[in-house]
Length: 71
Image 1: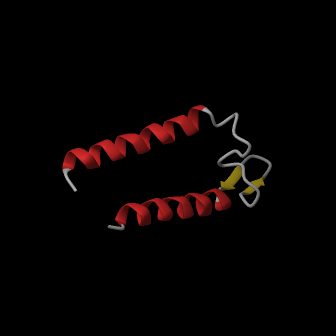
Image 2: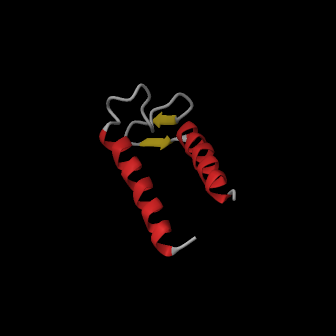
Image 3: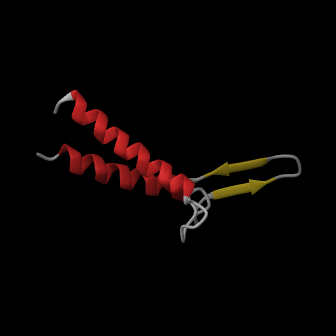
């Protein structure tokens, strides 16, 4: 694959991520606030680990990379 084509594909991916961030409030699900994300509140601190969000992003990115890796 040529360098130009790779840059165009990466640019389209960045545009897609940008649109998700801009429209994040209007989506039916909120990345980072999915069921399964762990949030523990103490008196003076908060521990937050987006477990479900990480798993979802991992599956989506794996699928995208698998599709681009096929020839």
